[in-house]
Every structure is written in structure tokens, then in C-alpha cells.
Length: 210
Image 1 (cartoon, rainbow, N blue to C red):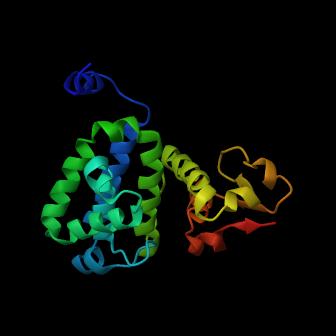
Image 2 (image 1 turned 60 degrees about the horizontal axis):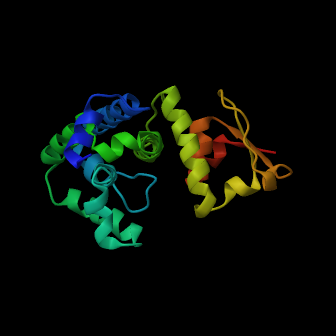
């Protein structure tokens, strides 16, 4: 089967969480549209040294896995920064136009990877929202995806998932890996737990440690 025929086949089906991925992309755009130019270009986020426009450049860049990451080999941080730098080179209007196309037309790799990318996108949306002191209602599937993203990322980022018993208070079963069953318990919403597992320490005040 050729690449073109594979793409045509994918276009005829809806993949798991594809619709929610598109919806979350549009929700991020709504958040960004509401920002002043100063906040968009230089506002604080939970991503160190990145403003909202940089976060947007990064999540858009994830749609282009080969061109964004392959040239950098194992240097993922350098690839991420290149995505942000590329977004810095265009106007807000042009970047938001690009974002709307990205939201409506996810790449084939993003559609296939929607269960993973939804969590990453949800985390970065919260990076913007929380960094600017805003609030929003996180949809149920996005909250679960953020929690799962935290579980996966924590395995190599900070190993918190290996040391703590995690008890979401809003509708997900507790999670305790074998080595963490006798460790301290951390309780909180799926979103807050996921953000904490991803290394966003500012959310710790919302969690209960026992």
C-alpha cells in the first residue's frame, strides 16, 4: 500500500480520540485569542522561558515529526526550541492562522497518535492557563489524558510515579506501581496530578500528600 493510499484510507475513518484532539486544539486557540498582545508574546507559562506563542509553536511543530525532530537526532530539547523559534519569526496573526489550519487538519501521524498527543496538548494548554493565573473547565477526556501523560512522562523525568501511590479524586482508579504500593499517597484531580507528575511543581499546593 502506497503512502497516498494509506492517507486516503485514514481520511475515511475516525481514529480513537481524534475528535477530542481537534476540539482541544480549538480550545487552546480560544484561550490564546483572548490574550492581550503582551500576554501572548511575553506572558508567563509553566514552561520555563516560554511565552504562550512559544508553547503554540511547539505544539504545532509536533504535527511535523520528521521535519521537526529528525534533523536533531536525540537532542529533543533543541528540536522543541527550534519549533518555538520558528513561531517567533512570524506575526501573531500569521501564527494564529497557521494554528487554525493545524486544529482543523491534524497530520496522519497526529491522528494515529491522538491518545498520546491529547495528553501532551492538554498539559501545554494548562501551562498557558495556569501560568497566566487563568482558569478553565478541563473536559473529562482531556483530564484523563493529562493524567496518563503524567504517568508516562514521570517514568523518566522525575520518577514520582515510581515512588507514590496516586489517588485521583475525580473519577479515575488509584494507580500504584509495584514499587510504590507502600509509598506515600498523593490525592488530587486528574489534571493536577498529571501536571505534578510532569514536573509542574506549582500545582503541589492543590494536592494532598499522606
